Length: 225
Image (cartoon, rainbow, N blue to C red; front, side, top):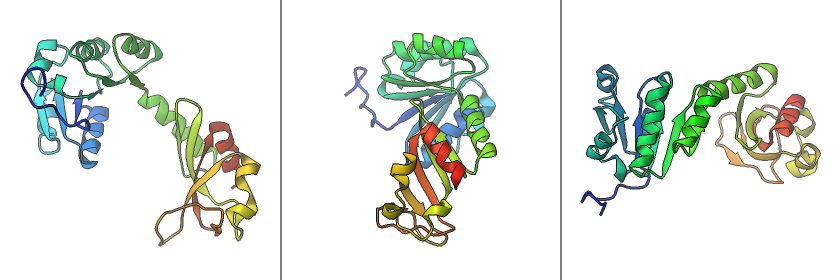
């Protein structure tokens, strides 16, 4: 039981505060993935728009610690703060979440300075969606990658075509990993299911590969496909 008498919530339930473009999409995606979501926003129009999508959605001031307690927010483990343009509200919301005891707080930032402030008041994870999307689009424009995701520690995953030198050969024979320093995680062939790559997997001309490795090595590999 939680300290206020409410049953403890499942660990995968999530609070999403700020239901604009970013927060609303995160909340709706979490619901599609099977999570219960409590959405909070001060704008009644946004609350109404997501009333039939989210598990629970309320109009409230999330910068008020007492309001968060009344809504049962301390019973959640994770929260996402999608407030971006109102920096003061963003910071005060993260601080309030930290004060009521949430263990995992994800927060959207609009600048490096904003991000530093969010971390200083309790955010465990700071997200820069515009920066991430800009980086992703740049890679797609300037390379032959079909998709690209980069992580904070210089590690990336990309979707790209099979390189000509590997077509008709097994992954073991072509030795792509030792030559380029990337791991071929899986292969998707038109009309067939995704399969995890094995040394015995033979590549075909139209195969789409999922590759992982250091960002610079993934970029180099994509350039030769």
